[in-house]
Amino acid sequence: MTIFITGICGFVGSAIARRIRDVLPNAEIFGLDNLGRPGSERNRRLATEGIRTIHGDIRVASDLEAVPPAQWVIDAAALPSVLAGIDKRSSSRQLVEHNLFGTVNILEYCRRSNAGLVLLSTSRVYGIRPLTELPLQVEGSRFVPDFSKINTFGLSSAGVGEEFCTAAPVSLYGATKLASETMALEYGEAFGIPVWVNRCGVLAGAGQFGTAEQGIFSFWLHAWRARKPLRYIGFGGMGLQVRDALHPEDLADLILKQIQSPEAKKSRICNVSGGVDQSMSLLELSLWSKDRFGPHEVASDPQQRMFDIPWMVLDSARAAAIWNWKPRRSLLSILDEIAGHAERNPDWLDLTA
Image (cartoon, rainbow, N blue to C red; front, side, top):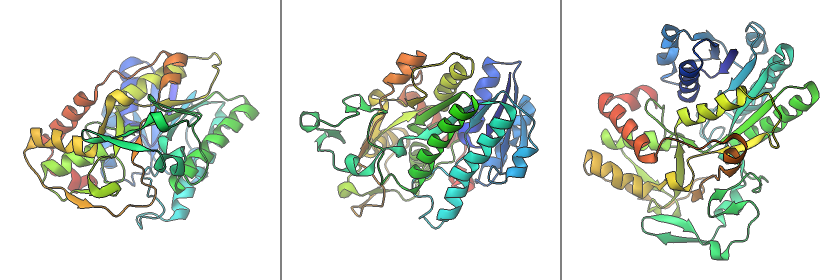
């Protein structure tokens, strides 16, 4: 099997490449990366593991024309922050060119090569307004939806399902990913290309290039360990907002099932996440960090940022039913892995954030 991974030098792309190499040692794995993210240059060492990396940019169609044909493409390239396009680190035009126009270039490559596609999407395709309007109650150190008052299609105590509202606003970032999903599914229908779309929760693990807007579990632990400034932003400034975590190796295990399954499935879109059992509030993350690294002050900033939501946990029941998949890595094991990396690499944020 020949597998082409975009964004291969990123945290997720490199982890998927290594996991596939472990499971399919005879597969030919190669990938493309523009090395634009601080820290990505370090993952060019994949060459020592028999995984070829190509320096190129998915926004440049001719860069993909020079890539040899593959049987499967795993699209792990993106500007991944929900604030991309408005954070003054990237322009709105750059976001659209990378996350949407780049996807079209990848789809054209798939059409030419007759390659299947696994598109990595995001929980941020779900509507912000209904998520911010959820009735919430405080249980211990976190927000919990008051499900006795909720009758929202696509939402249950297990989390947000694939049928949940995707109407705008979803953020510029979420809109580019939602549009990419639609284009991928349409290309699949038009040209007979197998397409699987995985809407991922918060991915987390050692070696992640974490920031306050993306990769929050890694960023928080590294910043706490290095005694860098931290803030609880919005929703009362108490750190009660909740996310779930997923290790990229667990995502890779689902992808392995997808690229080794030629038969049709009843749905091409699945949520992929740690779920309620692997969720945590920022305050709970702080309490864990205090136990591991000692005390550190976190500032309170009640001013809410654009696109922020107080509670997001994905329900992966569809992935379990269709693919017999569930995450193997517990949240505590993921945090322990990140903490160990932070202890071994005290300057990690200076290099990557």
